Each structure stands twice: as structure tokens, then as C-alpha cells.
Length: 323
Ligand SMILES: [Mn+2]
Image 1 (cartoon, rainbow, N blue to C red):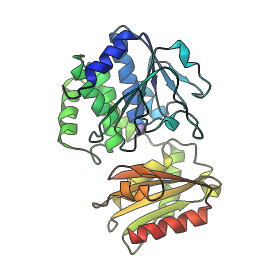
Image 2 (cartoon, protein in one colour):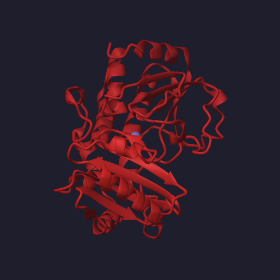
Image 3 (cartoon, rainbow, N blue to C red):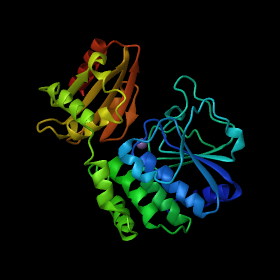
Image 4 (cartoon, rainbow, N blue to C red):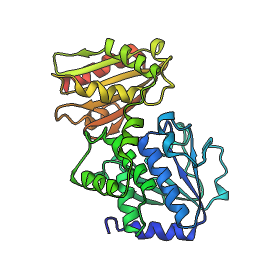
């Protein structure tokens, strides 16, 4: 048994029938891979699962939802009482699906499975593993603990989540991640399909945003990279899935001479998001904490509300210069 809690989770699932599984807001490969693999496993267990998400699935991840309904719902207004159990996956806090103002836990049992260090254990049962690369890596272990056969459909989804969260084995990887990836390939995971969908399907609009971001990239003498994009420009790209994160991973984390860096976007006037990446041994998770965010050693993020674009840029540059 990898996780002591695995059998307790299976017991709860066996006692339930109508089971909700979430995707988080603007779902990424780990969110889609974890929720759709859980859906398939629950079906095999004879259950009635349903996937609910606050936002639609991005086009390049639709290969994982083929034949599976994903209901886009307003979590704050949804009637949970008709269901027995909610399985929350890859959601560091309730506001990843509920409103950001005052997220309320629904009145049904909640299982919380996650790998984000900032997760406050909001579930009734919490299986958290901060050493895991992704929730999909955790789920591989959980399914094995359950004695569940991992077929090629499930293997592809789990490997997609691992590939997505690690930037194809660049970040947050450890020995087990590679071992598990190997087992998933043995089970028939379609590696080519994952790579072509996750990494070689860049929409023209996103490519355009990359070009603009590169034009605004600055390498500071203190050894960090910054890209800061005001609302005036970002408003055209704010709805693209993972626009900021892709710039952080593909460019911020790769500039020779930098130790770390960030991309800051003004999503709405006075609402700022920041994605940090480490390039050379700098813990950006701790850096993000300084402005109320969080994350991992190599990748982290933060939101700042009620601060002007200029003030946010100045504040962040100041913190980075000292870091
Ligand atoms: Mn995610």
C-alpha cells in the first residue's frame, strides 16, 4: 500500500452511488487527466459518476473527454444534495471551483486528493502528497492500492496529467515519477497522442501572445527575468487557457543567465496574476508566499487584488532584487 488512506477512500466510494468528480477552473492536463481517469475507474466499479467543471475543457485536452460528459456548472448554485459524494481533484483550495469571495464546502461528503503544499485539508477526507509530481501520479498509486487494473485508456490519461504538470519531465520529478511513467507505457499509454496534443498544438492566438511576451521580456542584472503585461494588452488574451503559464514554462524558465523569473499579467484593472518559475535552484514557492501566493520549489503563482499595475510591477521587482 502506497497510501494508508486508500482503503478508506475505496470504502466510501463503495458505499456511494452518485459520485461527483470535479475539474478546476480553467482545467489543465492534470485536472482533466485525473478527473476522467477517476470517471473510468468509478464506472468499472459499477458507480454513477458525473464530472462537473466551472469552465469548459480546452480543445487540446478534449482527447481525454471523448465519450464522457463534462457538465459546466456554477458550483455556488449547484444542488449537491442529489449526490452522495464529491471527489475534489487537483484543487488546492475550494475557490478553485467555488466563488473566490466566500467559498462554502457543500453539505455532502468531500474527498480531497491533491499535491499542492498550500492545500488546507478542506475535505472530510484528505489525501495529500506534496512529494508527488501531480494528482495523476497519486491516482496511479491509489488505483494500484485498490487493485484496479490500469487499461490503456486510463494509462493515457494518467500519463497526460504527469506530462502536463512536469512540463514533460522537467519540473517536480523524482525517481518514482519515471518508474510510474514506465508502468503507464507498459499499460499502453499513448505517448505520441499526449505529446502532440499537449506540446505541439499551439493556437495561433496563443503564439501571438508568446510573441508579445517575448518582446516585453527583461533580464535584470540581479539574475531574474520579468515580463509584465498591462490589462490594455492582456485583455485580448486573458481568456486563452494557460496563456500566462505557458509563457512562464517555455520562456521565463529558459533564459540563459537567469536564476528565476516571473510573468505578471493584469487580468482585470487592479487584479494581477503572477506565475513564477525557477531556472537555477531558486525556491520560487517561498518567493510567491511573500505576496500571498504559493506553489512549489520550481513553479509557483500568486494573485494580487486592489493594486495598480505600476505598483504591482514595482513591488515585485523590489522583492525579486532582494531575493
Ligand atoms: Mn491543475
